[in-house]
Length: 418
Image 1 (spheres, one colour):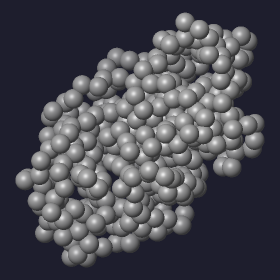
Image 2 (tube, one colour; image 1 turned 30 degrees about the vertical axis):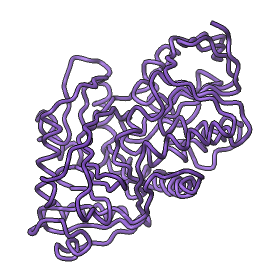
Image 3 (cartoon, helix red, strand yellow; image 1 turned 45 degrees about the horizontal axis):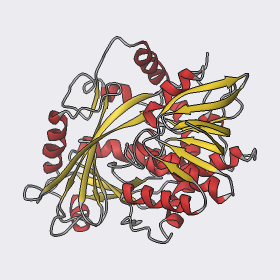
C-alpha cells in the first residue's frame, strides 16, 4: 500500500472530527479524515440532537455523587456503573469524585457557557448550508419534573446557572401542559431554557461532511488506524488499514476510542465510555412543540421532523456495544410516566452508542505537551453535538498556530497528568 500525504489527518468522523475537517478545509488546509466505521456511525448518529447552552454545568457537579449513589449499582437506573477490576475505571472514579466540588463547577460553568453559546451560533449558521435538511429549530428545551422535590432541585440549578446569565423560566403544571398537551396530569411543573435548540444529528453530520469535501477535504470511512511512528516529539507517520499517512498535524477526535490511541502515542487520556440508548418512534399526531428532558427519568424526547426520538441512560461499562434490553425498556416505561400517546407509536429503531466522558465533565481540546504536532479533540460526553462545531473551529485555530478564540486552559489534555 502506498503512502499518502496531507497537511492534517483527523482521526474520527463523528460530529467533532467532521467539524474539524470543515473548518480546517475552509481555511485552505489539505485535510484527510479517517474512521474505522462510517461518517456519523458512532454516538453522532442516534443521540438526542440537543444544542444546549443550558448544559453548562459539567457532569461532575456538586451533589452528583450523593444523588447517584442509589443508582450506580442498579442496572435499571438512569446512571449505572458496571463495576469491574480495571485500574483505569477506578482511577477515573477517584478523579470524578474529586471534581464534584462547587469551586470546580464555578470555574467550569463560564467556560462551558461561552463554548456552548459560540457553538450554538456556529450551528445556526451551518444549518443554512445548501442541502442541510436536519430539522433544526431553536425553540428552547423543557425540563419536566414529576415531583415537587425534583422541581425544587431544578429551581436551584436554574438559579445557579442564572448567576452566569443563563435564562430559565419556571412553568407550573398547567402552563407546561399548555405548551406540550401530551404531558400527563399531576406533574409538578417544568423549567424552560429558551436559548437551546435541536436538530437531527446524523443528517447534520453527514451533510457537513459533504460540505467539507466540497472544500477539498477527503473523508475515508472504513479506514482503521493501526499504529503510529514517532520521531522525537513528533508523529512521523500513521499506519492505517488503507496505507501509511504522513501529516504535518494529527487531530485525535476518536471519541471513546481515543484513550487506546493516546496510549500507543505514550500518554494517557482518562476517558470512560458511557453507553446511551435511543428509540426512534413514528410521530404522534401532535409532536411536542419543544424537546423535553424528563428529569427524574433522565430521558430526552426530541421531535426530529420525520420521527420522535427518546434518548437516555448513562452506563459506564467499557467498550461494550451490546444492547441491554432491560435498559431500553426502562426508557419506554419511564417516558410513559410523563407523556400520553406513546403506546400506539411504531418503534422504528433501537440504537446505542458510547459517549466519551472525562472525570471532570469537560472535554479535552488542545495540544499535549509531549507531542508537538498532535491536537486532541475528544471527551465531550453527552454534549458532543452541541460543542462539535466550536471544537472544530478551535482545532483549526490551533493547527494554524493562532491564539484560540476561547481560553482552553480548563480543556488541556494534560490537566490530569501526574
